[in-house]
Image (cartoon, rainbow, N blue to C red):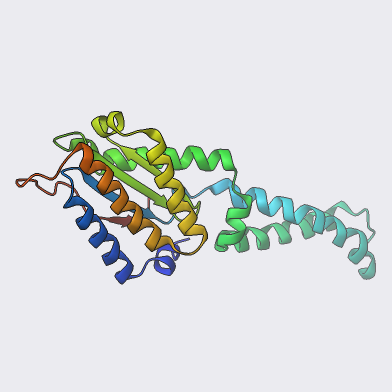
Length: 219
């Protein structure tokens, strides 16, 4: 999955996001940090489960219809095991390299839990809890899962309504689905900046405390 970032995010895209953050932070003393990762987790069991699901019925069909053509009895367990093992290996390797197939077999509950944990970890790991006014905001985007989490520090979390953050998340997700990811993200960042400005107006002595973008991988 390591090519997702390079496929979706160009250098000019990164600069557009940075410019959007700088524009937003000219309105407010709060800190906005977009973070874009390939995936929140590597999901080791997904390819195993998917390979087994795909290999089992095909191995049964091959054993029942193809094996007799080579004078093997269709009830031969060892022929089934050979077919299943070969197919399992082929499917596991294929699924491990396929973004589409991996997404297809991801467990939604596991995805939600892993993305949430990764976003919270990133929030603390990158120091968003250290801002002077407790108003750091992390916009966490994971490309494999097509998920977005927005985490606001203590003071901003209290002052800004949940519906606002939910709308921002949905706006970015819709942008990803419609292949307008960068535009949706930049516009959302500016919207967040405008909302934060109501609670935390820009100060002349304001210091940029955090990075304007983080591009990387949690794995």
